[in-house]
Image 1 (tube, rainbow, N blue to C red):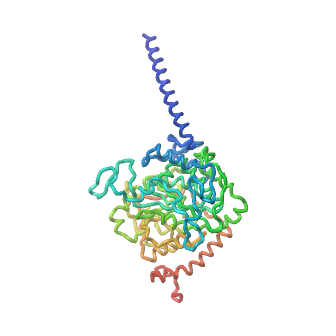
Image 2 (cartoon, rainbow, N blue to C red):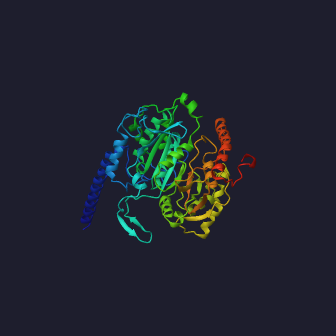
Amino acid sequence: MMLCKLWGVGMFSIVALTASNILLTLRLLRVKDEGALGGCRDGLSPVFLTASGTGGGSGSGSGSGVNKGWSLTHTNQSEYLSFLRNLTLSSTSAGGGSGRGGGAFSIDRSKGRWDSRRKYRIHDHVFTSPQYGILSFPQPSPPHGTYNASRSKWVPRRGVSTPTPVCLATQTSLDRLFWLTQAPRHWTGPISVAVFAPDVEYSLARVYLQYLLACFPYVGEKVSVHLAYPKEHPPKQVPVVVGQLLKACGEPLTVLKQLLRHRQPKMLSWREKMAYPQNMLRNVARSNCHTDFVFLVDVDIVPIPGLSTKLSNFLDSEQARKCRKCAFVVPTYEVDERAHLPHNRSELLRLTSKGLARPFHQKVFVHNQHATNFSRWEAREKEFPLEQEVTISHPVTNFEFFYEPFYVARDDVPQHDERFVGYGFTRNTQVYEMFVSGYSFQVLAPIFTLHWGMQGKMGRPAWREKQNNANRRLFEGFKKEVFARYQRDPLHMVKKNNR
């Protein structure tokens, strides 16, 4: 009897081991097949980059692995992976300024458009994801799902793309492009990205964007990318083999640092001092959103999980739709690199109580976000601890000139004045014009966005102070133009003897 039992256990172990080996072999074959995409496979936890480039937040992946912070719910998986393979590996080098070669992010320099002052050349939609249009425009036929009579809309079957009322718009230069791995991780709507790429940075940005699409497919699932460069520094070619970069799919910051080394000292001597045209780029990103509302943020501002869905539901509500001149403010907090990514307000406030989170720019420049009234927003946690649906917490009642909130508004708000370049008077002048023209600012709860890393005051280089002073002089004329346009001066910015 004992021998029979031992024989049975032994046979069971052999069968189990054989089955395990078969499954392992199939998995290895699958990984090998996907290796053409640089190891783009499921099974690894997402990396949340910190400012120092190490893993943090909700886990980490390394080597050639790709983060599992994505799912191809909106696209046939084999079709989409084939699309990425052809896109990223269709050429072995970065291409160049001629724009006549194949491959991703190519431009034709005979096309494109000028900015409002004919200083920068702009190429819209050099890459547009397969889902960008579907997420942006209502479809001619109702989506697969059921009709919700109470909300007068179709509720889609899970895994089916549907248009959203809001597009996230952002802008960046090459050296900050690695942040693009973060916003699309949890934002499920369309994302419009304007990239500043002068000289060799065009080729480097093109290669890096191909790398991001191959290694972080959730980025390629929903973005549209636009490139801009100054007319005196058009695109130049740098031969970089895309396939080599895909060996480091889990290290986007390391890869970017390697690419930045291709910039020569002669180029860096003028590049560092070049005034960054952020207002022009903001207008490019905004104008290429095709939704009713636009959420304009900087590239290093990270949405929390579920924010886009909850925000979309709010913007579809009567409360949001009936206010034509409302800007809905989404509070932003800085989070210490040692902390985990907070997913809701209660987790965020636990971090603030430990000194691991605080309102954005609180230490750098308090006037930047002060009018949001974070204390009042945080107090709602005691009143509504289980608050889930987005609502208006309170209006901004102490507006000040240097206020620069990240807000959601209809895309008919005043544009950013492109005369302001570099540092100082860029975002706040647009917000100021909105305020003068009659917009009200309403703070939303319980949603928020994050800036990964606590910010501190730093000394300003001479060139940055020079840009700030130049923009300050420009503002003297700008405020008079705004007064003449709207015949209002609520902050008493224009002296009576100047009117």
